[in-house]
Image 1: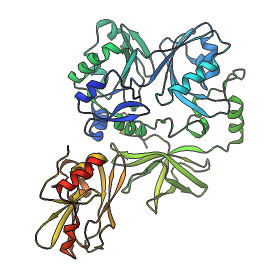
Image 2 (image 1 turned 180 degrees about the vertical axis):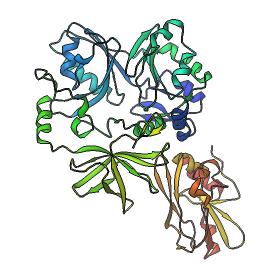
Image 3 (image 1 turned 60 degrees about the horizontal axis):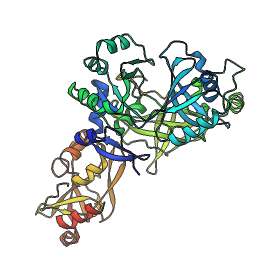
Length: 362
Length: 129
């Protein structure tokens, strides 16, 4: 049984090439992945992300529960609407999923988790909620559209009413607001400004059409992947999974250690790993020669072998980039080698961040 | 349904072959193949002067999505390559049967062309994909 989002017909209407994405029939592109990628870098593009899972966590213990569930500390969230990126680990310190937590009050939070991990996430969250006074509510009645790019906000602004305009006025990155029927967040997965907008499913086609009419280009999963990789953002299942520590997935910054009494899932294992300092690390690779770095290719370094977790051609830069998990001793700016089609090719190690706001950042 | 010109010959591995009538053939990949691969970002071509045998992998088409080997559909000597693809690999997407051609081979044995598929035969291959 394949799931379809409420925007399925709009995708077909726009000439989308549809693929199976973890049980969802989703657009991979609408003709050219590169044109879609460039639209987001240079103007505005939109993605149907209705397949992602919205989960509301409410109740007297919501804060205490989330302080255990995720590795970042929701106690940092003090302003209504503020969002936090974090990992959700198992007791062995492996990453079950990465997610965004939106804060409304100490008793009211919203999580947005990956679609591919929906079933296990919901099972885990439900199990972990035992003993806490919380209600966990999945919200499949919402669709979600991400509008991203330097012109994204201006184009969305032409569609908003006075109340919605006021709600998003001056909104900083990683914030959100409920404005009428729209839940508008300044989060995204492309390294550009823009919004992620959740709304009642029956209104999604109208908003999609209005965005199209405002000149926002529909973009598929293909462009979403090249954009997020240029932005150095992890993809669950490639750059991390349950067998990987957040310390080995460039997610150490999302672990909040300060409150020693906070016993978040996986803390003991992660603290031991941190003390040992022996976890591999996720770095960026750039290769200006011809060819494309791909997932799974072997990385050879003076300190041992590593592996490419995600690789692609970067449409913005014009050459190939990748994220790779390598021994911790590998240094930035070092040259290492990748085994490509039986040849060893030199690549440069950098921080895993390649393009921000349309510009090269290394 | 992809465009499959009737005047060309085809290999099951999605190369097209145009007989130039002077002992040489021009070779590229089909519109169907470029559609499967998506946006082309590099094309690695053989060298002029290479001697190739039928079935040899002699070029690589790298799209954003995947790298795909291109096979020699006939035996012979590579007498030209499409240098425009160096800077504009997207020609393979925009004009697979025209400006997106990849290389030309001087045939060792013209009868090898008879072993290739005609448009109808190739259409059947595409249907099975």
